[in-house]
Length: 359
Image (cartoon, rainbow, N blue to C red):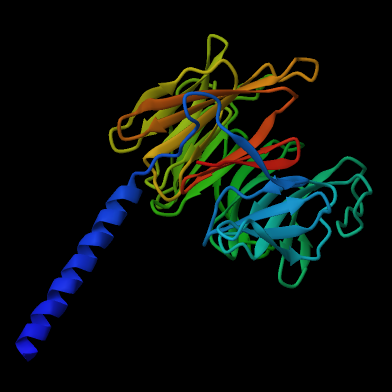
């Protein structure tokens, strides 16, 4: 009798395991639905949003709203809002959350709109980074000659120090409050849009070689094990890129008045063209499935135009090709400033509203 019970139990366990494997395999490669034979359905999620984080972590998304307070959205609970801090973020131009989302570094401007930001000794219009602990509201002003940064971990940052007056450029590491800084290496030219690949201990950035209105440059890779610097692109025609979890680079390139999207494979040390775009694209990689990349471009984004057409292209990075293209035409001016693809959710920040494309 006991042997029979054991056999039945084993059979039940095997059945349950088979069901779980089946469900996993069905969801592992699921593809975001951009619409049925037409324009994607655009639904407004949260109104009056100024800044949004570039990562969904533990099913939570960090935002700063028009009331200048920081909030946390619980995605699977109908976007329930929880105020993260009472700190007043009025007057900021940029927001960079720490990996654990408990700290934030913002770029603020001296316009007199927020007394929390100490701009003493600096003239009106000066921009400066400030470190803020969201749990304690501690605030520290960083050196005004810091022109770009990336979080290394929850407590420290990489940053570029640029003294234009003396023509000094360097890459440094420090505590997030700016203390105990250490120079990593000198730079020949300015770099911006820093991104850190913790898995491979490398930094990526755009280095401006020739000053122009376009402000594009070469994508540079810095191996922090030996401080070796390597250009991934030879031209100076990129001004935007992202990293995938493996340390590959997705970037744009200005070619014959088009902003085309490319994939740089670090293993093969080879680039592949993914899309051709009429306008400068935004793209986002699904943090839970690095096989999928969303690429969008906005056509006719003028306030006097009848409407704005947004072109959505879903790309499979394994195959390095577009697998779905959709268009939408809004009967109003709509200019996306940020997008985020995460686990079958596509978020889009435009005109201070956060939208979601529901599959």
